[in-house]
Amino acid sequence: MPKGAESLLEVLAAHDVEVVFGLPGVHNLAIWEALAKRPGIRMIGVRHEQTAVYAADGYARTTGKLGVAIVTTGPGAANTLGATGEAWASGSPVLVIATDIPSTLRQPGVYRGVLHETRDQKSMFTAVTKATFDVPSAVEVGSYTDKAVQQALQGPHGPVYLGVPTDFLSDEVPHHTATKVAPTHTVADLSEAEQLIAGSERPLIWAGGGAARSGAGPAISALAAKLQAPIITTYGARGLTDSPHVVRGPVHAPPVGKLWDDADLVIAIGTDFDGMMTQNWLQPRPRTLLAINIDKAEASKNYPADVTLEGDAATITTALAAEVTAKPASVDVAAVNAEVRALAEADSPEAVQLLRALEGTDATIVADMCIPGYWIGGFHHVTKPRGLAYPVGWGTLGFGFPAAIGAAVENRTIAVVGDGGFLFACGDLATLRQEGLPLTVVLVDDGGYGMLRYDQQIADHTISGVDLTRPDFAKLAESFGIPAVTLDGFTGLSDALERASGPTMIVVDASLTPPVTTSPRWYRKNAT
Image (tube, rainbow, N blue to C red; front, side, top):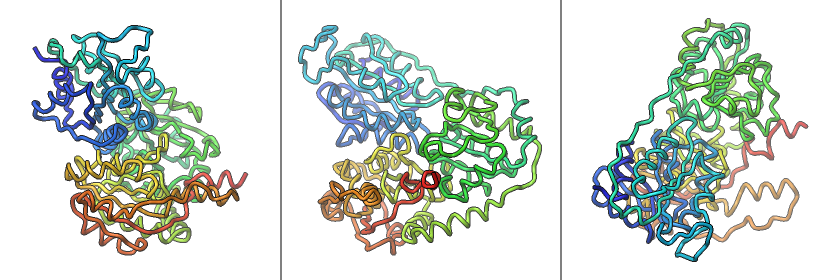
């Protein structure tokens, strides 16, 4: 009979898990021992528990697979909460496995002072996960691991917490046969949706992260071609399709916002219209709204839908595209895209230099919550599904570099970070070097928290707390054995990216003005 730790890994392997991220601790060493003896699952050891979950999230976003983080008890589990919250708000399928104190030392309702003990570790995760599980007995380690994986992978996706008392990992347990998550192929009644589309003259497609996670890009391309409708993609859906109907800019830019205002029908696919995309709902409710969403309540929580088709976005959109009648074009998307790029050029030629350098690479891009990241999230032309990971859920500063570690496991990756956020997890340069990952860190150094400095300036506040002492980042990288180069501005970035291979760092001394996607520059707010 296998031991509990071996059973846990058997279930993960049965769900096609090939890599996990984690940190050893006194209570989870049995899992590390089992990993050492089990081929097929790669353990990437990180230097902080928050990095473990960010990396699992980055891996999940850019591969579409389950991201798994394994951490230890108490403070180890607590260290993951910020990253778990980002995965939750962004709908990432992540499994956080944390050990707990031995069941033999636990007294219900009593805090005894066992090493790493908490009163109720699971409850810390309730607000930032889709579901939480505590394994109640050693014989149920396999079954509860199976339940947790299924919850994370069933739509709507999200992170799940699994707590395992450490003594269960060493007990002998029965084998458990895992149940694979079956795809959802529900097709709703399309008649009302077809009537709305037939009656529209200026339809607009708005595609969100749920559309990306369902692989709805080809279906959305087909629907847009049939309706000659522009496609606005949210941050979570960048690269969903490279259709000529895709608008290459954010709805925060007035030419794109006008498409929303002029549309007589918005077809919302896999989106909940969050505040960051709608300028905190200052965009008026569409005249008519057709929603396609796996969760009917999510579809209408911010803008009530006239008709909702509940189910898998790819399945329903494919069926809808086959049934609707073709329409003539009402918008010149190419002209809108040219106008958006011209506005970006006039606003910040330096930012456009950054965008052009990235457009010359096929690498996956992971951006942090920093001014360069805001430009990338809004204006970078992503040409492949899952080609951009951006922390748009909680908006967690420090996401970019550790999430890129996860993305780089299967894809050449470029992380674009600021100097402030990079220092949150700079110790994981050791992970990058040890694992030899194909990750280039583009660190834009503006001397501190540039966005917050801008906020203070426009509010006429005293500049305080945002100008930071920081290291020589190139020398820091080199001290970990990672080649580094420093550039004065973005000139030369394209060449530096082309030369980069394996773990590398490019430090760019530059300061950018925030784009129109940042709240101080929202034009709808500024007009009210």
